[in-house]
Length: 102
Image (cartoon, rainbow, N blue to C red; front, side):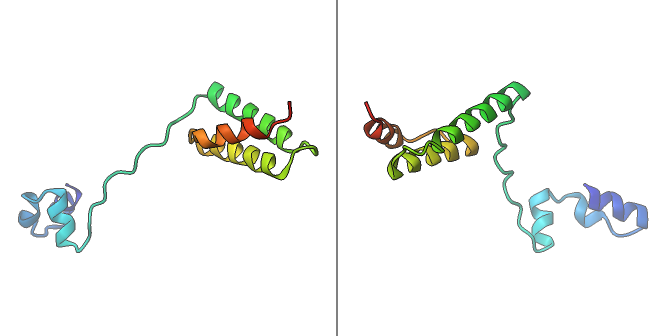
């Protein structure tokens, strides 16, 4: 533990820290250990390129002047889901199919 090594270097009393685990040390300092955050999925260069291409396509589709307001909202939600990495809701997919002209 870094605290023990530091105290040994400067000649402090490292004995009380040697037997402590990280949680006990944090509590002695008035701190709380938090769990590690979930790692974000790291994309490869090809995956990132595909995602950017999909985003560009969705932006082009959303800029279509003939889209209704509802269709535009669906396109913007799809773009948001793509960028955030979330899977689209089934309701969103159903709504997208209902409003498209035949």
